[in-house]
Image (cartoon, rainbow, N blue to C red):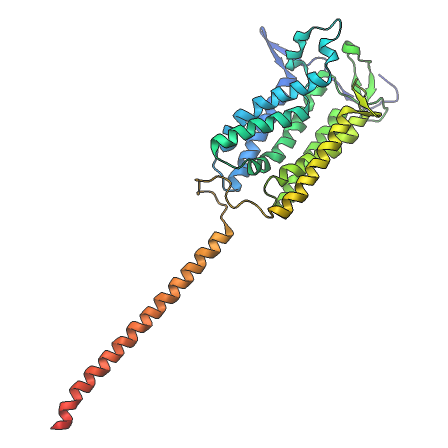
Length: 329
Protein backbone atom coordinates (compact mmCIF):
# COMPACT_ATOMS: atom_id res chain seq x y z
CA UNK A 1 0.00 0.00 0.00
CA UNK A 2 1.24 3.46 -0.89
CA UNK A 3 1.79 5.30 2.43
CA UNK A 4 0.52 8.53 0.86
CA UNK A 5 -2.84 6.88 0.14
CA UNK A 6 -4.40 6.22 3.51
CA UNK A 7 -7.73 6.09 1.68
CA UNK A 8 -8.26 4.80 -1.85
CA UNK A 9 -10.71 2.89 -4.02
CA UNK A 10 -9.76 -0.78 -4.20
CA UNK A 11 -10.10 -2.71 -7.43
CA UNK A 12 -11.85 -6.09 -7.55
CA UNK A 13 -9.39 -8.95 -7.71
CA UNK A 14 -11.42 -10.44 -10.58
CA UNK A 15 -14.51 -9.55 -12.55
CA UNK A 16 -15.76 -13.07 -13.23
CA UNK A 17 -17.58 -15.51 -11.00
CA UNK A 18 -18.39 -19.06 -12.05
CA UNK A 19 -21.69 -20.82 -11.54
CA UNK A 20 -20.41 -24.28 -12.31
CA UNK A 21 -19.04 -24.06 -15.86
CA UNK A 22 -21.00 -20.86 -16.58
CA UNK A 23 -19.00 -17.60 -16.28
CA UNK A 24 -20.86 -14.66 -14.73
CA UNK A 25 -19.12 -11.49 -15.83
CA UNK A 26 -19.60 -8.28 -13.86
CA UNK A 27 -19.04 -6.17 -16.99
CA UNK A 28 -21.97 -7.85 -18.74
CA UNK A 29 -24.18 -7.50 -15.67
CA UNK A 30 -23.49 -3.76 -15.51
CA UNK A 31 -24.53 -3.40 -19.16
CA UNK A 32 -27.69 -5.48 -18.66
CA UNK A 33 -28.72 -3.54 -15.53
CA UNK A 34 -28.11 -0.28 -17.36
CA UNK A 35 -30.32 -1.35 -20.27
CA UNK A 36 -33.08 -2.38 -17.85
CA UNK A 37 -32.95 1.00 -16.09
CA UNK A 38 -33.02 2.90 -19.40
CA UNK A 39 -36.07 0.97 -20.66
CA UNK A 40 -37.92 1.16 -17.33
CA UNK A 41 -37.35 4.89 -16.87
CA UNK A 42 -37.98 5.63 -20.53
CA UNK A 43 -41.29 3.78 -20.33
CA UNK A 44 -42.40 5.95 -17.40
CA UNK A 45 -41.55 9.13 -19.30
CA UNK A 46 -43.25 7.85 -22.44
CA UNK A 47 -46.49 7.12 -20.55
CA UNK A 48 -46.33 10.56 -18.90
CA UNK A 49 -46.19 12.12 -22.38
CA UNK A 50 -49.28 10.26 -23.49
CA UNK A 51 -47.75 7.11 -24.98
CA UNK A 52 -48.66 3.50 -24.44
CA UNK A 53 -46.91 1.25 -21.93
CA UNK A 54 -44.64 -1.24 -23.67
CA UNK A 55 -43.78 0.92 -26.67
CA UNK A 56 -40.34 1.81 -25.32
CA UNK A 57 -39.51 -1.86 -24.73
CA UNK A 58 -40.72 -2.84 -28.20
CA UNK A 59 -38.46 -0.27 -29.83
CA UNK A 60 -35.58 -1.16 -27.49
CA UNK A 61 -35.65 -4.68 -28.94
CA UNK A 62 -34.23 -3.06 -32.06
CA UNK A 63 -32.15 -0.31 -30.47
CA UNK A 64 -30.18 -2.40 -27.93
CA UNK A 65 -28.69 -5.01 -30.32
CA UNK A 66 -27.84 -2.30 -32.85
CA UNK A 67 -26.23 -0.27 -30.06
CA UNK A 68 -24.08 -3.17 -28.86
CA UNK A 69 -22.88 -3.88 -32.39
CA UNK A 70 -22.21 -0.19 -33.02
CA UNK A 71 -20.33 0.23 -29.76
CA UNK A 72 -18.12 -2.75 -30.49
CA UNK A 73 -17.48 -1.70 -34.08
CA UNK A 74 -16.37 1.78 -33.02
CA UNK A 75 -13.99 0.31 -30.45
CA UNK A 76 -12.50 -2.26 -32.83
CA UNK A 77 -12.09 0.26 -35.65
CA UNK A 78 -10.48 2.96 -33.51
CA UNK A 79 -8.28 0.45 -31.63
CA UNK A 80 -7.70 -1.98 -34.47
CA UNK A 81 -4.09 -2.61 -33.45
CA UNK A 82 -5.35 -4.48 -30.38
CA UNK A 83 -6.86 -7.13 -32.63
CA UNK A 84 -5.20 -7.07 -36.04
CA UNK A 85 -1.56 -6.17 -35.40
CA UNK A 86 1.24 -8.73 -35.28
CA UNK A 87 0.92 -11.18 -32.43
CA UNK A 88 -2.77 -10.42 -31.87
CA UNK A 89 -5.71 -12.74 -32.42
CA UNK A 90 -8.49 -11.19 -34.51
CA UNK A 91 -11.01 -13.48 -32.84
CA UNK A 92 -10.66 -11.32 -29.71
CA UNK A 93 -12.55 -8.59 -31.57
CA UNK A 94 -15.74 -10.57 -30.89
CA UNK A 95 -15.11 -10.95 -27.14
CA UNK A 96 -17.36 -8.15 -25.97
CA UNK A 97 -17.42 -9.51 -22.42
CA UNK A 98 -13.77 -8.55 -21.98
CA UNK A 99 -14.66 -4.87 -22.35
CA UNK A 100 -14.49 -2.40 -25.17
CA UNK A 101 -17.67 -0.60 -26.21
CA UNK A 102 -17.43 2.86 -27.77
CA UNK A 103 -20.34 5.06 -26.70
CA UNK A 104 -20.21 7.03 -29.97
CA UNK A 105 -20.84 3.93 -32.05
CA UNK A 106 -23.40 2.63 -29.58
CA UNK A 107 -25.48 5.82 -29.77
CA UNK A 108 -25.15 6.15 -33.56
CA UNK A 109 -26.11 2.59 -34.48
CA UNK A 110 -28.51 2.33 -31.55
CA UNK A 111 -30.34 5.36 -32.96
CA UNK A 112 -30.61 3.57 -36.30
CA UNK A 113 -32.14 0.55 -34.60
CA UNK A 114 -34.52 2.79 -32.65
CA UNK A 115 -35.54 4.52 -35.89
CA UNK A 116 -36.42 1.16 -37.44
CA UNK A 117 -38.39 0.16 -34.35
CA UNK A 118 -40.16 3.52 -34.19
CA UNK A 119 -41.23 3.29 -37.84
CA UNK A 120 -42.58 -0.19 -37.31
CA UNK A 121 -44.47 1.03 -34.26
CA UNK A 122 -45.68 4.19 -35.98
CA UNK A 123 -44.30 6.71 -33.47
CA UNK A 124 -42.12 9.80 -34.10
CA UNK A 125 -38.46 9.07 -33.50
CA UNK A 126 -37.66 12.49 -31.90
CA UNK A 127 -40.38 12.02 -29.27
CA UNK A 128 -39.05 8.55 -28.44
CA UNK A 129 -35.49 9.89 -28.17
CA UNK A 130 -36.62 12.61 -25.75
CA UNK A 131 -38.36 10.04 -23.56
CA UNK A 132 -35.35 7.72 -23.23
CA UNK A 133 -32.60 10.38 -23.05
CA UNK A 134 -32.14 10.61 -19.25
CA UNK A 135 -32.49 6.85 -18.92
CA UNK A 136 -29.61 6.36 -21.35
CA UNK A 137 -27.46 8.67 -19.22
CA UNK A 138 -28.30 6.63 -16.11
CA UNK A 139 -27.53 3.43 -18.04
CA UNK A 140 -24.09 4.80 -18.93
CA UNK A 141 -23.50 5.65 -15.28
CA UNK A 142 -24.16 2.03 -14.34
CA UNK A 143 -22.26 0.57 -17.27
CA UNK A 144 -19.06 2.45 -16.36
CA UNK A 145 -18.74 0.31 -13.24
CA UNK A 146 -17.98 -2.58 -15.57
CA UNK A 147 -14.66 -0.83 -16.28
CA UNK A 148 -13.95 -0.87 -12.54
CA UNK A 149 -14.40 -4.64 -12.42
CA UNK A 150 -12.10 -5.03 -15.44
CA UNK A 151 -9.49 -2.59 -14.03
CA UNK A 152 -9.47 -0.52 -17.23
CA UNK A 153 -9.84 3.02 -18.55
CA UNK A 154 -8.32 4.76 -15.53
CA UNK A 155 -6.62 8.15 -15.54
CA UNK A 156 -3.24 9.58 -14.68
CA UNK A 157 -1.40 8.66 -11.52
CA UNK A 158 -2.55 10.51 -8.41
CA UNK A 159 -2.26 10.45 -4.63
CA UNK A 160 -5.72 11.84 -3.93
CA UNK A 161 -7.73 10.04 -1.22
CA UNK A 162 -10.12 8.67 -3.85
CA UNK A 163 -7.36 7.29 -6.06
CA UNK A 164 -8.09 3.98 -7.77
CA UNK A 165 -5.73 1.19 -6.78
CA UNK A 166 -4.84 -0.89 -9.85
CA UNK A 167 -3.42 -4.27 -8.92
CA UNK A 168 -3.42 -6.13 -12.24
CA UNK A 169 -0.37 -6.16 -14.50
CA UNK A 170 -2.10 -7.80 -17.46
CA UNK A 171 -2.40 -6.05 -20.81
CA UNK A 172 0.41 -3.60 -20.09
CA UNK A 173 -1.09 -2.29 -16.85
CA UNK A 174 1.25 -0.90 -14.22
CA UNK A 175 -0.01 -1.40 -10.67
CA UNK A 176 -0.40 1.84 -8.79
CA UNK A 177 -2.82 4.63 -7.84
CA UNK A 178 -4.69 6.45 -10.58
CA UNK A 179 -7.57 8.84 -11.17
CA UNK A 180 -10.82 6.78 -11.18
CA UNK A 181 -12.09 8.13 -14.48
CA UNK A 182 -14.78 5.44 -14.52
CA UNK A 183 -16.19 7.03 -11.34
CA UNK A 184 -15.88 10.56 -12.70
CA UNK A 185 -17.84 9.62 -15.81
CA UNK A 186 -20.41 7.65 -13.83
CA UNK A 187 -21.16 10.64 -11.60
CA UNK A 188 -21.15 12.99 -14.58
CA UNK A 189 -23.73 10.82 -16.37
CA UNK A 190 -26.00 10.89 -13.31
CA UNK A 191 -25.74 14.68 -13.38
CA UNK A 192 -26.53 14.74 -17.11
CA UNK A 193 -29.64 12.64 -16.57
CA UNK A 194 -30.87 14.93 -13.79
CA UNK A 195 -30.12 18.01 -15.93
CA UNK A 196 -32.23 16.66 -18.80
CA UNK A 197 -35.13 15.85 -16.47
CA UNK A 198 -35.04 19.35 -14.97
CA UNK A 199 -34.70 21.15 -18.31
CA UNK A 200 -37.45 19.05 -19.87
CA UNK A 201 -39.87 19.98 -17.09
CA UNK A 202 -38.82 23.63 -17.03
CA UNK A 203 -38.75 24.34 -20.77
CA UNK A 204 -41.07 21.62 -22.14
CA UNK A 205 -38.45 20.27 -24.53
CA UNK A 206 -39.70 18.41 -27.55
CA UNK A 207 -38.89 17.27 -31.09
CA UNK A 208 -35.59 15.67 -30.02
CA UNK A 209 -34.22 18.61 -28.02
CA UNK A 210 -34.10 16.71 -24.71
CA UNK A 211 -31.99 14.04 -26.41
CA UNK A 212 -29.76 16.68 -27.99
CA UNK A 213 -29.25 18.27 -24.56
CA UNK A 214 -28.21 14.89 -23.17
CA UNK A 215 -25.70 14.46 -26.00
CA UNK A 216 -24.25 17.96 -25.60
CA UNK A 217 -23.93 17.71 -21.81
CA UNK A 218 -22.33 14.28 -22.00
CA UNK A 219 -19.79 15.50 -24.54
CA UNK A 220 -18.68 18.29 -22.20
CA UNK A 221 -17.89 15.81 -19.46
CA UNK A 222 -16.38 13.25 -21.78
CA UNK A 223 -14.00 15.88 -23.09
CA UNK A 224 -12.24 16.60 -19.80
CA UNK A 225 -12.46 13.00 -18.57
CA UNK A 226 -10.97 11.67 -21.80
CA UNK A 227 -8.10 14.14 -21.44
CA UNK A 228 -7.17 12.50 -18.11
CA UNK A 229 -6.98 8.94 -19.38
CA UNK A 230 -3.66 7.24 -19.98
CA UNK A 231 -4.68 4.19 -22.03
CA UNK A 232 -3.38 4.01 -25.59
CA UNK A 233 -5.34 6.07 -28.10
CA UNK A 234 -4.93 7.72 -31.48
CA UNK A 235 -4.03 11.42 -31.34
CA UNK A 236 -4.78 14.22 -33.80
CA UNK A 237 -3.01 17.56 -33.29
CA UNK A 238 -2.14 16.54 -29.75
CA UNK A 239 -5.68 15.57 -28.72
CA UNK A 240 -7.09 12.08 -28.33
CA UNK A 241 -9.49 10.94 -31.06
CA UNK A 242 -12.39 10.77 -28.60
CA UNK A 243 -11.80 14.40 -27.63
CA UNK A 244 -12.24 15.46 -31.23
CA UNK A 245 -15.31 13.26 -31.53
CA UNK A 246 -16.80 14.81 -28.39
CA UNK A 247 -16.17 18.33 -29.72
CA UNK A 248 -17.75 17.60 -33.11
CA UNK A 249 -20.81 15.85 -31.62
CA UNK A 250 -21.24 18.68 -29.08
CA UNK A 251 -21.37 21.30 -31.84
CA UNK A 252 -23.86 19.24 -33.84
CA UNK A 253 -26.11 18.76 -30.79
CA UNK A 254 -26.10 22.47 -29.93
CA UNK A 255 -26.82 23.40 -33.55
CA UNK A 256 -29.77 21.02 -33.59
CA UNK A 257 -31.21 22.55 -30.41
CA UNK A 258 -30.98 26.08 -31.85
CA UNK A 259 -32.43 25.23 -35.28
CA UNK A 260 -35.15 22.97 -33.91
CA UNK A 261 -36.26 25.55 -31.34
CA UNK A 262 -36.87 28.08 -34.12
CA UNK A 263 -38.60 25.72 -36.54
CA UNK A 264 -40.70 23.67 -34.11
CA UNK A 265 -41.05 25.33 -30.71
CA UNK A 266 -42.90 23.55 -27.94
CA UNK A 267 -43.53 19.86 -27.45
CA UNK A 268 -45.39 17.29 -29.54
CA UNK A 269 -49.12 17.19 -28.77
CA UNK A 270 -49.35 13.51 -29.77
CA UNK A 271 -46.44 11.10 -29.30
CA UNK A 272 -48.21 7.90 -30.29
CA UNK A 273 -50.85 8.29 -33.01
CA UNK A 274 -53.83 6.01 -32.55
CA UNK A 275 -53.46 5.82 -28.79
CA UNK A 276 -55.57 8.36 -26.89
CA UNK A 277 -55.72 7.00 -23.34
CA UNK A 278 -52.60 8.86 -22.17
CA UNK A 279 -52.78 11.74 -19.70
CA UNK A 280 -51.17 14.25 -22.04
CA UNK A 281 -53.74 16.25 -24.00
CA UNK A 282 -53.46 18.65 -26.92
CA UNK A 283 -54.04 22.04 -25.31
CA UNK A 284 -55.13 23.55 -28.60
CA UNK A 285 -57.64 20.77 -29.14
CA UNK A 286 -59.00 21.26 -25.64
CA UNK A 287 -59.48 24.98 -26.25
CA UNK A 288 -61.19 24.29 -29.57
CA UNK A 289 -63.50 21.79 -27.89
CA UNK A 290 -64.33 24.24 -25.14
CA UNK A 291 -65.06 26.93 -27.74
CA UNK A 292 -67.42 24.58 -29.60
CA UNK A 293 -69.15 23.65 -26.36
CA UNK A 294 -69.54 27.31 -25.42
CA UNK A 295 -71.00 28.10 -28.86
CA UNK A 296 -73.45 25.23 -28.55
CA UNK A 297 -74.46 26.41 -25.10
CA UNK A 298 -75.11 29.92 -26.39
CA UNK A 299 -77.11 28.59 -29.32
CA UNK A 300 -79.13 26.33 -27.03
CA UNK A 301 -79.85 29.25 -24.69
CA UNK A 302 -81.00 31.41 -27.59
CA UNK A 303 -83.19 28.60 -28.85
CA UNK A 304 -84.86 28.26 -25.44
CA UNK A 305 -85.40 32.02 -25.22
CA UNK A 306 -86.89 32.09 -28.73
CA UNK A 307 -89.20 29.23 -27.82
CA UNK A 308 -90.38 31.03 -24.70
CA UNK A 309 -90.96 34.23 -26.69
CA UNK A 310 -92.99 32.33 -29.29
CA UNK A 311 -95.03 30.71 -26.54
CA UNK A 312 -95.76 34.09 -24.97
CA UNK A 313 -96.82 35.54 -28.34
CA UNK A 314 -99.16 32.60 -28.94
CA UNK A 315 -100.68 33.01 -25.49
CA UNK A 316 -101.23 36.75 -26.09
CA UNK A 317 -102.89 36.12 -29.42
CA UNK A 318 -105.28 33.60 -27.92
CA UNK A 319 -106.21 36.09 -25.16
CA UNK A 320 -107.08 38.73 -27.70
CA UNK A 321 -109.29 36.32 -29.62
CA UNK A 322 -111.25 35.49 -26.43
CA UNK A 323 -111.61 39.15 -25.43
CA UNK A 324 -113.05 40.24 -28.81
CA UNK A 325 -116.55 38.60 -28.46
CA UNK A 326 -116.95 40.07 -24.97
CA UNK A 327 -116.52 43.55 -26.33
CA UNK A 328 -119.22 42.97 -29.00
CA UNK A 329 -121.80 41.89 -26.42
